[in-house]
Image (cartoon, helix red, strand yellow):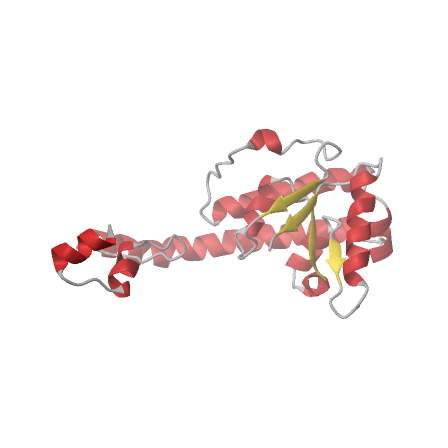
Length: 207
């Protein structure tokens, strides 16, 4: 193919090759006509602020519910046993609010392929691996999976609002300043995966 292209055009460069390949991770907005420009301007002024307000309201409400559910629980309590009773039911209310956040952000319908491999029973598939783990779009996968326990760095717990929401998933935190953290993390994941208690699925982002 390269030889044919070279013989027809007389020259072939790496720049030409890059121009032919579309990057799925880069979006270039091309406004070809006046209608598109006017529509973009109006929606930017009206729709964007409305979406931001709705998203902030939903996140703050979910954060408030998470604070209520976590009240009186220590970090050790969250690692010792899964939530039960009203705290477990409150988890679904928080998840519903976060799903609305995804909708308000513009992801009205998320198509999931291979749903049969994501059973509702965490005992059948106690660990879920998602790849590639690279951006905030991981949050959409977490919502689609029903808010599993994420494996995350410990600093995540200090994030405003989001930290409490992550804490409510009963995450497995990785302490990077602890030389034994990797072994402890693996041990905790195995304990949850083999436990007879009703732990949420463990979500591992790779790489």
